[in-house]
Image 1 (cartoon, rainbow, N blue to C red):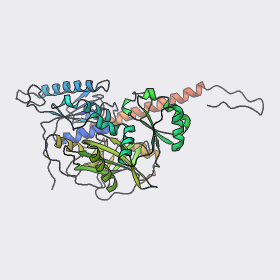
Image 2 (image 1 turned 30 degrees about the vertical axis):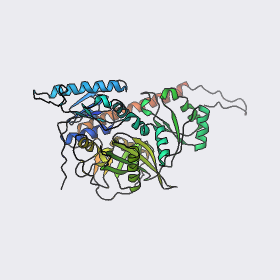
Image 3 (image 1 turned 60 degrees about the vertical axis):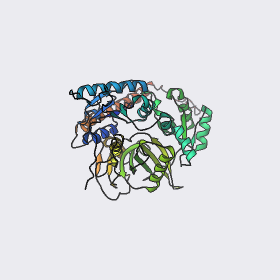
Image 4 (image 1 turned 90 degrees about the vertical axis):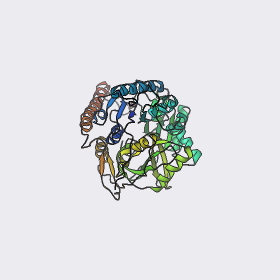
Length: 445
């Protein structure tokens, strides 16, 4: 029989995402998960016109601040809470979120990207008790969110992690890349500081020393240190992830492992198709790490198996829900977001009921992955075969329709930009006069 979870529907949730990506399907997943449980959901996102904002489960949307300032975010949250309380107020004492007396119902705040999680942790003391947040400090989160600090954390705890170098100059970057063995993975230690529209990716694969030098030269623009990491070989069924919620007592009743079957970019990017699959080694590593760090809250960890050693290397630790967290929705509807709401409102969090074999498909990225690698196959999971779609839901179809339109426009714009760049470069290429002798010099590009 289904275990009915007792939610406090008087405590609304405000989703917060400072990242301005309109195709963030995790935002939609959180709105649907909590909204279906009868919890009022509001969102602070880039725009009220994005696909996720079309969800029937969002009561209101509010534009995120133009910068990632923690002070600006805290002020905005208080304004949002005042607006929601005013809209809900019906003259009854203790109206939702009413800050006029100490007995008012608080708001739960759920960050959906790293920069939001860090900003909220920085201001947690001043936001409490009006806003419910996990017991996290910015310093604790930086130990795992900062890519350089994560490498140090893994080294201190003896966890497998790709060999990582932090160059202090252009020549040193080239030497370190050569030592690691090209190609190498290049990461910015604090990707949330990257300028919007600046053309810098948080993670990239560099294949030449010239690329390494060019990338390191952009360090002032990136705003954080450049890391160079050994590139672990990609392959079928080597990429895994763990999503969990660690409650106020340090327990992790809601935690599970999944296998990445398709990704975008192909072989090294975000999960396009994932499957709930058992992996005791990854599960044990994640739980031991939480205990060692004293971690609290929702998290998303990425691992890659090194087939030559049999070790699972921790690649990333995101201190917030992963975009594909809905994969781990058990038959009773419990997921990490619902677990967070239950715990922070003083309710018991029941243990997960595994649904091995369940799949999660992100339609737009899965299509790109299939076009790039149509023959890729993965081992079939045992048990339940239900598929959850990131965007499509029969009870909430508008976000999928809006995403389809926006995605088509996005692809057309990218294609037009690429065409203009190619056409422009051809027009600007100087004509090479015919050679007058058998000895001539080719001008390098």
